[in-house]
Image 1 (cartoon, rainbow, N blue to C red):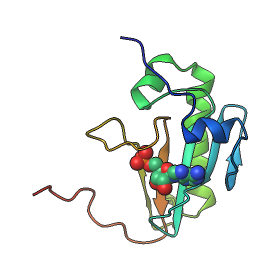
Image 2: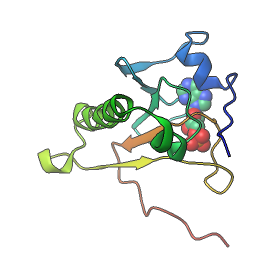
Image 3: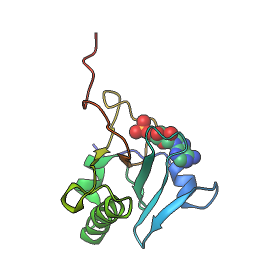
Amino acid sequence: MPYEYDEENIFAKIIRHEIPNDTVMETEYTLAFRDITPQAPEHILVIPKGYYVNYDHFAQEATDPEILDFTRVIGAITHAIGATPGNGGEGYRLIANAGRNGVQEVPHLHVHILGGRPLGRMLQRAE
Ligand code: AMP
């Protein structure tokens, strides 16, 4: 079944410059900006400029240059915020929510980069 993409979602509007964002990094294929409701001292969202609804859509249909660039930008930001454990940083977490079970609010692929404080265990067991 083909992926359905809502071109009126808020991140599509950011890509089209219809609403502002706090840009951290921008390349030909990728945009990174600060989350409007940060959950940690560092909370950055990385999105492809192409219209992909979630990670599996991107993995199946994005071009190799898009995928390479997206991955490189995520890595560059973990370095830029000083979070990379291999280089003396204290670490970070990447999150990509998808669909109903993943509790995805904005239907355009985004990877959350979180850092700057201990983030606790990955998941709380639901009661
Ligand atoms: P998710 O639940 O993974 O879909 O996360 C969506 C994220 O987008 C949330 O952390 C929101 O705070 C964030 N968000 C929503 N609107 C904006 C916006 N205009 N600029 C930056 N971040 C936003």
